[in-house]
Image (cartoon, rainbow, N blue to C red):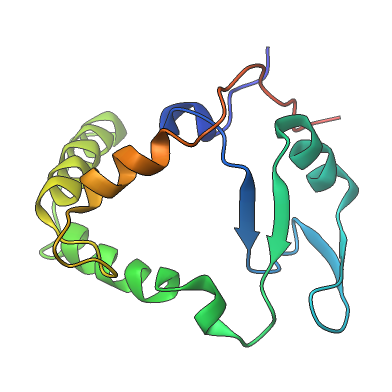
Length: 137
């Protein structure tokens, strides 16, 4: 059986995915929003009924605060550097730390609300997860 993708852990499947023109998804970038998507990537999107949306190259504002939040996440999670006995211990610590951050940190766009509170509202909009997609031919 194929390994489930990331969506089951989110509690469902989003209706739209926004991608930064990664080579695993986009074969050719045309003018504007037109793209030639990778055939296997489209098969995955069709399987999960996700509408793929590619960002315009060099238009960082389209991905919101994603790029900035990667740097913030590294700082929040890996400063100072922590040491772990094995990968399982690291993963357990990361899960606990991420949950702690979502409960304590304000959302960047809505400072009066916590990330966890907004995520609960978004999670309710996800479609139920059914069958895993076999990513290999």
